[in-house]
Length: 177
Image 1 (cartoon, rainbow, N blue to C red):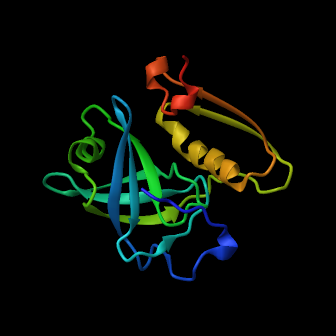
Image 2 (cartoon, helix red, strand yellow):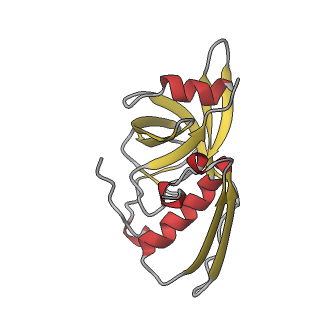
């Protein structure tokens, strides 16, 4: 998978927006832990997807007898504009999370609306950041941290994540040993 890092000023004008582009093509599924997977998507029309780190997409999934809608925060950097990723924890009895884990494969398409949400980091220069997360709540913060890393600007970041056990930590870099 080749994901190009681009600065917003360099992004083409053919961006995907929620009112016109809602069909996403899955291009990768990556297991993070035994019950967490990251799903990577591109616009089926090949458009770039503009979003701000911390935002989410609402996914409409046909999981049985009805269409179910669930919101998942983006876990990818907004500077990697040709693809988006969501990281999803399997929820016992959860219709959508279990369907995604059991059925979504590269090449499949899903309906989604977004980006949505206002949980974004301040953009003042030379800012200090304290990122706190737990369990699957790490995903919007992952997006923010990845954006800061992609920008390669000096940043003072403290990132604290909690999980039930070390094996439950979603980011491998946070796991001990």
